[in-house]
Image 1 (cartoon, helix red, strand yellow):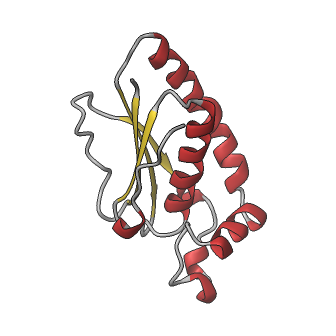
Image 2 (cartoon, rainbow, N blue to C red; image 1 turned 90 degrees about the horizontal axis):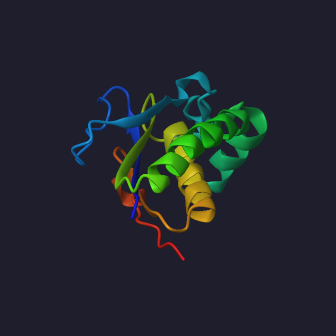
Length: 138
């Protein structure tokens, strides 16, 4: 079974280490997307909150960014499944690991879970540990 480990993180604290022994995976830089954390009403929210999600979906290039990522990671996931690979890590970084990277990790995990139910997806929010979940696949 392919285990996909998704991280959101802060570039200020460094890129997450891959503990699978495979030495990496994807690392996507969300800092090119407008930061909701610079807007007072979103400062204490995270990318898991509905108001931040709406902002990212309607006021930024995040939907286009994630569509491109979905295409890119699908190539590898299809290949890894056909070759019985066991691990893939996907990292999303932003300045503080609170808004953009959290949002991207949540949305990509949902996409993978729906498109590839035969995989096991784990999300770790390195800076927002209370949000870390291991979704159940159907």
